[in-house]
Length: 228
Image (cartoon, rainbow, N blue to C red; front, top):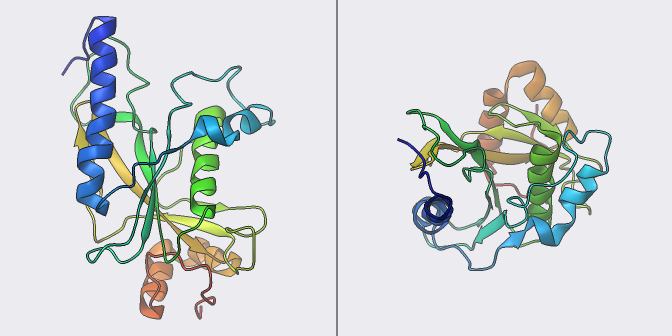
């Protein structure tokens, strides 16, 4: 398909794609989504990465500020908290009148998800920081990646200090918007030793151990390290 050619039609199409993801696709995938959006412009994460040595852009794109994180509270179907980014798959990489090839990614082509046993600020802050890293440093994530953090995931008492990027087997790997395809990258919190195990033995073997231990794809900051 082709993106709308006039500026007004393109802006409406852009907003419609955004709404389709957040208001149609996300509720199907995660249950009811809270109305509040924690945005990048509120977080200061974009500015922090812009000042870093890793920055690959000279100035911030005004399209980025409204991107953020949405939250789905627990439900009978999904008895845990879900935190999901909203914006990396916006069609900000497309210009009016551009032809969109079948199977092409929408925006960066993915959104990131953290499922957790707790309602907390740390998943929101981690996702906002990683979104800003993607945008400002022009470094994308992918399935199978490992991502260590400074300190701990929560900033407090937990043995978890990194993420592995996996496919949640209980959900589709991707979904389709008018602007292109969107992959779901599920981030699972792990310890330093678990991350090293995944590097040597593969993430699938690590996830099998996490599933056997009972935590699986849900990040529980209070859990102990699995036996490796």
